[in-house]
Length: 66
Image (spheres, helix red, strand yellow):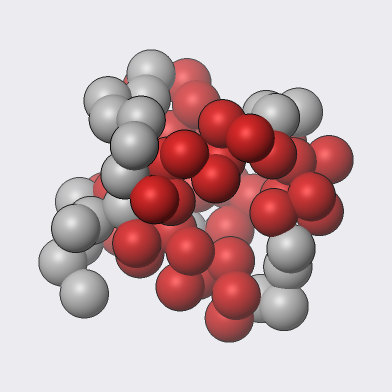
């Protein structure tokens, strides 16, 4: 599942969900759901914010298979 790439990138940066939440302004709960795949189809803006904080493109975070 492509959203697991988000978790992999976050962990590679030694970042907790709470830290990513603080840096992006997106709730840790929502980020957790995205990583688990229980929430799908985040908005383009949410994907941009997450990708920017992880230092990747939206495509690399959300559309690259592991």
